[in-house]
Length: 615
Image (cartoon, rainbow, N blue to C red; front, top):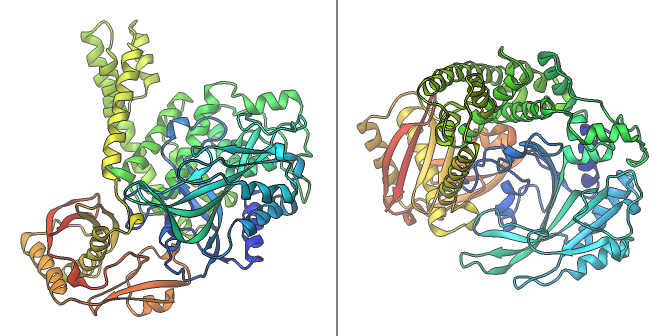
C-alpha cells in the first residue's frame, strides 16, 4: 500500500458514510495566535465545535497537512517528523461514540484488513473532571475486542485539548496495532513499544473555561486523527517510517549527493488486499530496519524531514526570518545544511532535495496545488537561504579561531553563543577544537542550551496565552478590528495590499500585510481616522454562506484561496468590508471603542506589520 491509496481509502470510506470532504487548511493558522502552525486537523475547525454551523454540514473528512515543532530535536529516529499528514473525520453535533467506534472498527478490519487479534485499545480512566469511560470500553467489547486488550489510562494518555488555554476538549479512545512478527500477547500492555498507536477517536463534549473548569458543550462532537506516515509504515511491516515510498526518493537523492548509504530496505510494500501482518522478515532485516548503523542514517533522516517540511512551509507564503514561523523555517533549512556537512556535503544541495520533494507524486506534489503554484519560489527561497547560511558558517569559523588563539579551552557558554548566533554545529565546534588539541566543557554547553530553551518556552507561553478558541469579548473585538484595518489599508495604500498573517491577544492586535515601503505619519493617521469613522458609524456586521467563486466575484477578500472549500462564510461590515472568514466577530462596530496604531515596522521582504490597540 502507498500513501495515495491509504488517503483514498480513508476519504472514500467516510464519503460513503455521508461525510463531505473539505480541503486541507493552510499550515499557517489564520487569525489564531495560539500556535505558529496548524498541528492537528481540528485546529482550523474549532469554531464549529462550539456550535457555529459549517458550510459543508455536520459530517466532514479530510487530509490535513500539519507541522509540529515541539520535538524537532527528536527528528532523526525512525518515527518523528516535523511535517506530516493527518487523516481525520469529524462529527459536529451529529453522531457520537456509539456510531464512531463501529466506523473505526469497520475501517481497520474491513478496509485495511487488520485482524482483530492484532488490535488493542485504550480508554479514559476518569478523574475529578470527567468520569471513567466504561461506555466506550463496552462498545469495543461488543465489536469483538477482548477486555484484556482494553486499557484504562489517565488524562495524560487519553484526553485531548483544549487547543489553547481554554476551548473544546474531551476524552479519547486510541487504537493500537501489534507491529512485531511474534504473536501478540493476550493482555494489552501500553508500555510495550510493539503496540503502535495508529488511530485516535476524540470524544469532544467539554469546554475548559477561563477558571479551568470543564463544562459540557452544547453539542457532542467527534474528532479523529490517523497519521499517514506512521500508519503507512505499520501496514507495510516496516518499523522505520523512512523506508516507505513517501521518503525513499528523498533518501536516495541524499545518498546520491553524499555518496553514503542509508541501509538495507526491509519488507517491500504489500500488494492488493494482502493483510499487513502477512509479510515476513528475518532477524537481519529487522535489526537493520530498527537500528541505525551510524550517525549518517540519522543525518539523512533529518535532512529528508526538514527540507520536506521547509517546502510545505514556503508553499504557504512563509520566508526565513528571525521571528516566529520564519525562524522555524530558517532553523529547518540550516539544520539540514549542518547535517549535510556531517555527511561530507560541502556544496549547495538543498534545492536538489526540494526538487525531489516537488517531483515525487507519492510525496504529494500535485495533491496540494500550492506546491505546483509556488514551485519556483520554493526553490529560490531555499537556495538563497543555503548560500546565506554557508557564509554565516564561514564567519563562525573565523570567530571560533579567534577564541582558540586566546584560550586553552572553550567554555560551554562561549560554544553555545557560537551555536546560537552562527548556527555553528556542536560537532564542528568539537572538531575545530580537536584540531588544535583543545577540549570543550560539554556540561556547561548543555546547561546553556537548556537555559535558553526554558527562556524560549517562557516567552512563548506568554506570547500565546490567548487564542480565538476562547471567543472572549476582547478577542472578538480585536478580530473584527483586523477586518476594518485590512479594508482601510487597501483604501489608503492600494489594492496590492493583502493580509499575510495576524496575531491577536487580549492586549493588542498585530497585522502583517504586503507593502514595500514604510508608512509615513500622514498615511497612518488617515488609516486610523478611517477605521474610527467606521466605528463611529456603528456599522452592522452580517454573516452569509455562499459559493467561494460567488464570494470572490462580489469582492470578498480571500487570500488563502487554495484552502477554501466550495461553500464559505462571508462577513460584511456595512459596505466598508467583506471577507471570507470563520470568526468570531462583533455584531456592530460601535462595540469596538477607539482604534489606535501603536507601532509600524518591517515584517520581512515586501511586508509591513502594524500593532494596534482598542481603548
